[in-house]
Length: 305
View 1: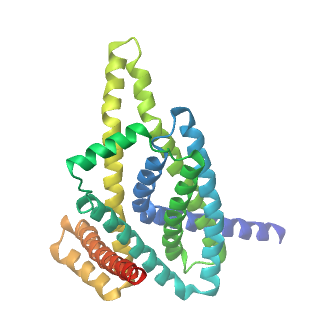
View 2 (view 1 turned 30 degrees about the vertical axis):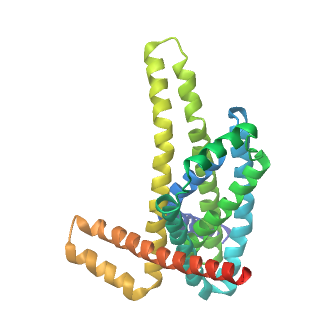
View 3 (view 1 turned 45 degrees about the vertical axis):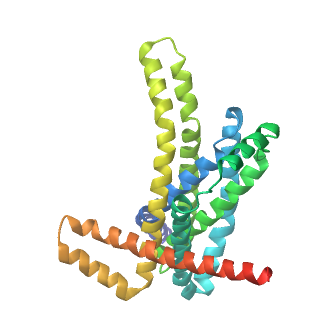
């Protein structure tokens, strides 16, 4: 009897672990798009810190990220238990936010160029020379990075919750916890490597061997391009992930994209859904950005009669 109960327990545990493994892989694949943006944003937050303080800052932000997950995972479980109907709307809101943020980046890149006359530019240079701008304190950097992490962590947890929403409490808890831990360790481990990448290049460039010096110079040349590439990948991921969430929340649009993928056949069938999701995300983000800017202008006019 006892042996039978033990075997049943072990079978249940093995079944749960097997399900958790499958669900975790699925969640990791879905949230990988947010990872690029998370990496780029956090690496940018830490850039500019004194070299000796880069890793302590990354560690401080990582601890803040763990605290964010400790808040978000129980909150996600509560939503799943008492308001499961809210999962899809929350995912849609998160997707719209990602698309809006991506469009805001593009708008700043293409349209928000500050125009100055030569006299104004010269005056600004004199002002900066007379009084250098105050650098952002380490605590402020950490606080800003943790706030950014909270938004992206909420998106990761929301996407994961959407995948495990139909599972029982135990599987939801384990999968959400696994994704929270793996994503945090993975992101900030990579961020630590990225921010020290140029230091490694500088170290190698000062070695005695010609090969090591050449490698160091190559790393120093490549480091800025790496940051730019991460930023571009992160922006693209916003539209792909956010657009995918939005289209999945609108069944007719989701089915239309699936039909379009089947119609073109292989090998484009794998590319078309991502492309259409990205376009949908760009359109949705543009609409939200226009509404947001319109409301901001109206508020500005009302406060300045």
